[in-house]
Image 1 (tube, helix red, strand yellow):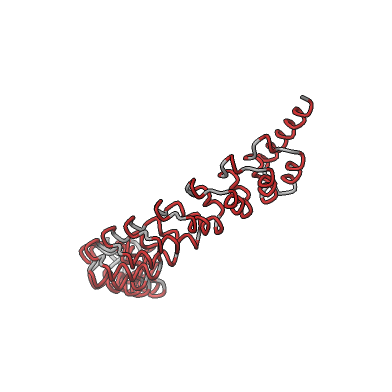
Image 2 (cartoon, rainbow, N blue to C red):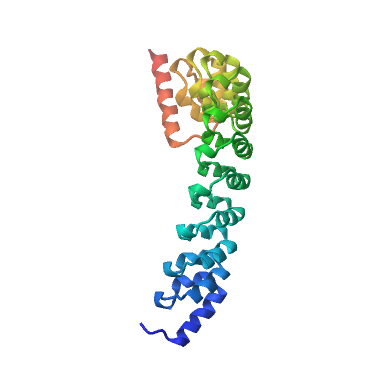
Length: 280
């Protein structure tokens, strides 16, 4: 198809103002010149540059403008230098860097920006230092830390941020001190407390923080007092309470909290049972 000069110039002016407008330019008008102008204005425009015009020069211009453009760079032009330029701008592009260029320096650069990028670091390139850097930012990254680097110190850093992360702590580091820190931070951590450290006191700490953790309290630690604390903290806990602890007082306490429709059904069912029991 023959290109109309006037029409081409019109597209040229549009692209100068907004590189992403290249996506609306008919393919026959997408020249190398137009592509270069587009990526200079907005690196993301590289996505709309025809493959045959994605030269090393144009790709570098695009990545210098916005690191995320690395996603659209042909593999043969993804060099170590280009990967570094991209990651320095946006650590998330680490996932688009070829494996052979994901060295310790580049991975550290990415993880320093955002700990979650530890997920894209090859297992063999994860160092103790890198893992600590990630977990200090966000404890949930403990999940992506190799077992050999999950030290007692690192686990403590994670658990202090969110006690529920006790789930990812190796058994040998689930000490009496650590489980208490975990439960105090997040009552739901009670689920991952070793039996030898489960105490009435620990259950009470968990339930006082969140009544619904009552569901993880061992039967021998369920008391009338704990039931009242649980339903007062969260009425929905009523569905986890054994029948022998259901009293008019407990039901009344539960009703004072905000209940969902399903919980109201639970309350009514247990109320009927109470009436039946007194009639028996």
